[in-house]
Length: 193
Image 1 (cartoon, one colour):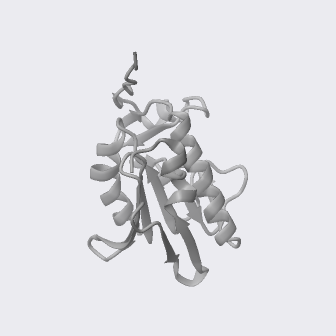
Image 2 (cartoon, rainbow, N blue to C red; image 1 turned 60 degrees about the vertical axis):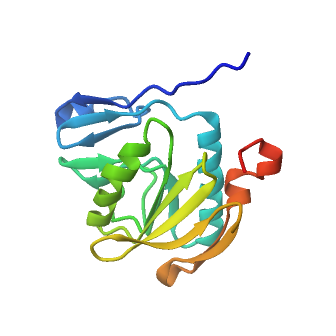
Image 3 (cartoon, rainbow, N blue to C red; image 1 turned 90 degrees about the horizontal axis):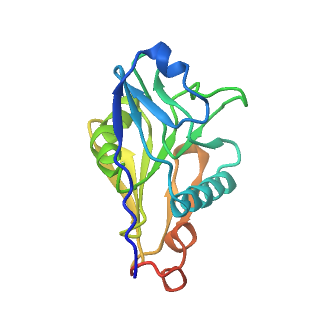
């Protein structure tokens, strides 16, 4: 008998900035206009994808800082925590990106999909982030979106039918992106084709 795993939903809890700052460092809790947005701990498959993306980006962009799960946003108004962020500089002691990231990546989960696509996407655009990558493990796609002024524009989509692309990231160079390396080979992972 196969048990279906159901991911707990996001929780929204009213909370002051000071209360949010007092939470443990290990808590991955975003803060949006006086509300703590609490996501469940990501599953191992999600974490593996984040690790592989981080390694791909770090290898392709050696002059930039590639980090996972750091705060992005305006203090006292909104702090989001993308799965991966690429910034020009950041010290080992900072928990909030000191500059607007060049690129952020969200790996979709059943519990965070709506938040990532409907709420975070426009916030990242408004913040002036150059690229927003959306990784959908279930659909086996990576969509690269570029800042188009008032909307996100599709730069590239990699999937099993079109598994690779070279993604230009302004003056910093290109990132070779291969869905099979990031999400795993569909034939060997048992993932849907």
